[in-house]
Length: 95
Image (cartoon, rainbow, N blue to C red; front, top):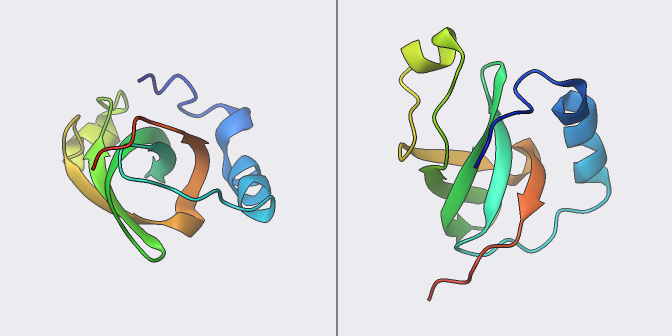
């Protein structure tokens, strides 16, 4: 997955807010969601959904030095809230 929308205006706070207002779709294990980690938007492959909390693994490496220095890397386990995501891609459902 690409984090090409790094600091791009089309994936910022406004996009996140619009995504949230439109209604977050049902998210399943195996789906991908995009969330902000510092200044960098990164993809997360969802491994667990618990109400409004998503657990998963980062699906791409960061490119910003401050994100790397903060300890983020592809495969890192993270936990985010549904209200923090700005984009969603349906993945293959894992049982």
